[in-house]
Image (cartoon, rainbow, N blue to C red; front, side, top):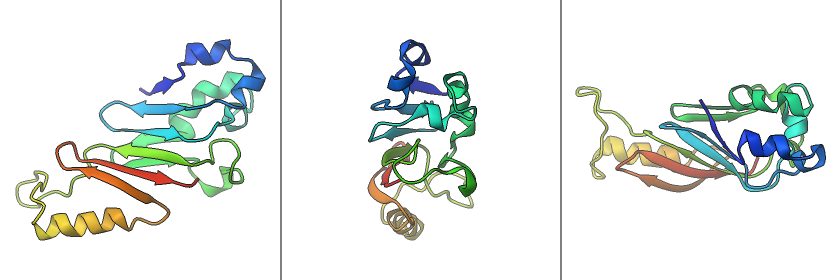
Length: 147
């Protein structure tokens, strides 16, 4: 289940015009991660039905947060032009993004371990992302995307 801020009940009280300019939308999948849209988003156009009735369907079909992955607009054919709908800059945090020890199946939390260093290099050079941080305790990888 997704937790959304502003809440769905708050969104229900918004006018259609307000739903086209929702500020600080944060979508969280507890224990997995979150996406915080850094610019106002148009939930009407992002809705699968292109109206207020479909807004609830955005969470889990248009915005999908899964272990180690956050997808907005799965399939490029559904993605609107930059700056429209949900295609705006966002801050993403994904939990439990450690590299795992193949023998023990436990997270590698030794910063000097070669696999940890390789993993950090991978996170820092992920295409179309701006690396912000990695918390070794939670495995929380924080990064920004332009759209």
